[in-house]
Length: 617
Image (cartoon, rainbow, N blue to C red; front, side):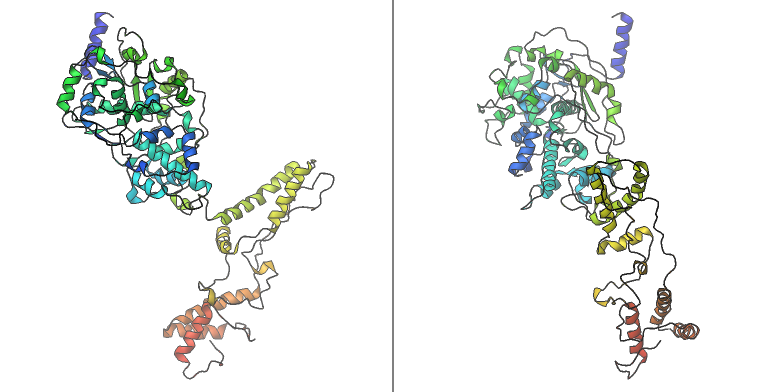
């Protein structure tokens, strides 16, 4: 590098307030860090055998074994002070260290290769729609904040299954458990006790969950948390997996190991240091740990902590080749993009440490709910996929922003099925009526196999005999723009049908469905069937029956009798003289709203009247 380029590099570093790469300058923070992860409720979440099988199949089952990890906050704070946010490594006396992809796969037992953990942009208004779509329940106003949902809401709603749960209920509860698991262990948020629902699309298919690089995303969050911790005036909350970092420190730095440890060498390795809050000897303070790290020598590091581990116990989805773990790449998780430079700590891979190469400059981005990070980091994502040999193509993800609004999904029950199934069936039948004539014209004159002909015959018969349910007929009439006789809301006050109404005549009921003229012939000959006749169209009856017209006139005129004002009574008497309304004088019992109004009118003015006396307007 010439002097001009070297001077330009120095100016860029000065302009961006960057420390020289490999600098040993340590910034001492004020206050002890507080981990953001909250895993207490996961111990109380009891899974059924079927749910446990789904969790194990997802590749995230080992995370549940790492819950309740005791965090030494003083040790955590002192180690974070050694972190350099430009190289993503911890600087000690003459060497550097950092958690690697191989460490994540062994310590947590989760996949570190696969597709990048990212999805489409999700706005705050899509939280309820996402939860309804993937969990079958929507959090209330007090259970969500700034696009995040409470972990306690997930536990309260989904930790207990009903006695005879359906398949959908089991899936919803298991998916909620996995969201709680990854949100509290791998991706703790700045708002403690909350989790983002943006991971739900990745947890939709339990068979595809393990094909995502959850370990790489967790390492990206850990690097981001360490880099934020060394920023002046930063928050005291530690973002990232504190369990992963503490177990990594214990594995590589024997001087920090507690007096007791589990001898188990199975996966996940974090279980060796998980004591559930048991006494582990006298803890040191932050100042004492600072002196230990300042005097730490190269010979005091255990550069091969996994030598006693049997490779046969490592699941296939956790195995990552050395060429992948030792290659430079970018770690992506939504808006988080962190550089991964394992060549700067080559001793952790059993190699000799060579010359320390520079680290590319990049800018850390804040979360934006409207930005598609798949497009923003397209080049980096493609490089990572080429490195890990990712051939997995995510299935067509559900476009959350195009899901129906909350009002249309509010009718879903616990199984995720719509309560308006009959209404959807009516709409489907109407769509079939419009589509079948088109199919008829297209297939006219063609010979069809017996199976296809039988199917078309069944469809035609179903459409011909279908009628909407009684409870849904009024909604269907309103959707079609049809009106019918007004009925009382009280079922005991509904009148019997008049003799003028013939139930066998469909034209007397404007809102009733008329059977579709399904086919020219209902017989199947020699494996063929005549196609549906699309030329005949149903013509609505425009003219109403004279009795119906007079009945509507009577209803509209008599409705004014309910008023006790003299003007309304006078107008009623004038209308009576102008229009003669035929009545049914038989022994028929009138009921409904009209009869109630007449009885009230008779009660007010008919002093001394008997029940047998007729009612006159």
